[in-house]
Figure 1 (spheres, rainbow, N blue to C red):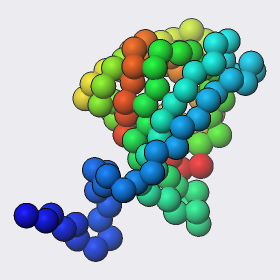
Figure 2: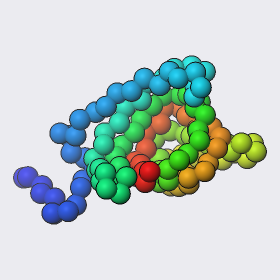
Figure 3: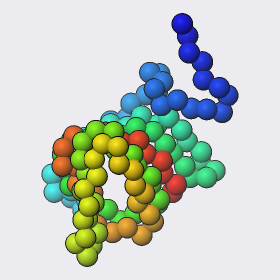
Length: 120
């Protein structure tokens, strides 16, 4: 049985969505390079919006957010720490938004897989 998706609805389980692999190795962002994979299911350049699935192994990256990003953790644990040292760990089932102006670190404590929606 073929499952169809209604018009103007985007399912994130489309096996035809290409995977983009990135190596993050900028020493201004990370001490140790890491590789991430992303499946971008939605883009709207006019609104600077993208959405999809992202995953990467353990790493710690410095962040200066010039965007708003909603995240929903599917697998793994991530720790967000602001520049004042306040930290929180998020895991499977947790949702949060990083707002424009966040300065601190994003740390994958384990392999992490998340749904994201970025307005940038």
